[in-house]
Length: 544
View 1: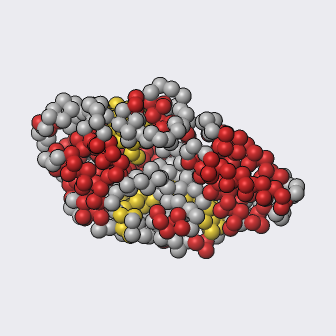
View 2: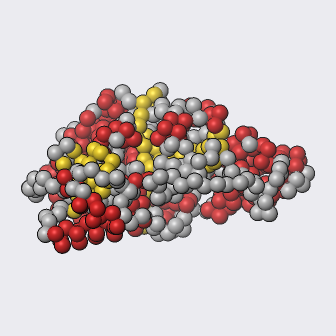
View 3: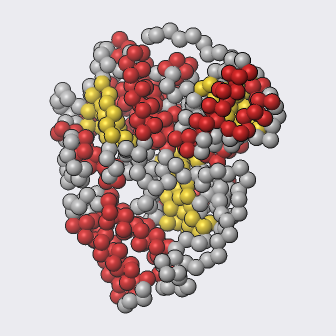
């Protein structure tokens, strides 16, 4: 392995994360560099990932003897006053936040998968190793494939892409399949509304995903892998390709990885903007160069996947958690969480929220804690009316259900789903009939068209909701909508059509008055006065 010198004592960090760049991080970095050059100062400017406190971006951090001190949100115009106030020594300034690791929003989290995101230079192999990287791969390579699969199984890790299927069971199925050719596929087609954790990890710690996929390759006997990334993530794509090249140079990819005899090649493939390609079999079709359409199951991808070969298909967060499990042991991970939901989940707070961003904590935290304590309520300052958890196909939960613990079984019992951990907040101005209509409309637009319940049912769903809102034979059309939802749930080939009824039914159940047509504007929205106070220091709603 290449030897790396120790890092210099002084470093300044400005995120290169897409969310931070969208609010001026590049301009802040340029202003800092220019000011330093003009003053003849030695400045080691590191473009790290985001810590996930998106309302504070761009967040500037400086290494001091007391830890990394943060300032934010910073504009280029703030740079002269920051330097004059002693930024390089962590000096006092109105934008000074204190030691970043000690900020309550971060300190009370349990960061496992996101432990390095925002901390390291994401494209530096040396920084990755200094912060514990590759320990999981080394531990895995010292064990038999079957032992690695057992460790993942014993940890209780479940797929973080939304389905929550136990990762170890999927891996064992692939391991037990005969055949010399097997694949590892990472589903990074993160298309759910209010989700951005995959992107943030790929941009902020890409070596972690590479390490996780290499461990998976050793565990099941694969020699080739693909990361399928949505085209809307150009920064993540660039970071992954740079990191893959660097990993080859370190002996972490390619032939005879770390002298173990394992050969594994990894490729990045870019999707073409189809939401349906987030479904695993549709993604495999796309990887094979075909139109992204859902496959009938069985056979499952673990037996006949990419090009008909046994294939592991896991989400970014699932694969990126594996190195920690191998490095620290299954029991340590299994000891965190509740019931059958073990370990941590990376929750993403977005929508109409004052403090949006990333919260990684153990399963079992309540929705109320996430929305009110971490998120600080709505950005508009109005009461929270509902929260949608699990993307555009997730249920709408009213305030009366905010004390639900965030775990797979508790949410399923409440007719909802945790999904990928996306949490989208709405205040009391939201029109829930319009939201239900959007769910059907979204399905109609994004359906691959292969099965009739999804392709036709979603179109008829839009038409039926329009009739209900218009007051046309309301009771009869409500009965039709209920039958339609049942048909789509039971008859669709995949979750696209099967889960679309979830937001529709939850909206009808918890907010029936919105469908009976009280005061509405011409476009169907509820008529409410909407004062929008400014949130001090806020630049974004927290969506990414």
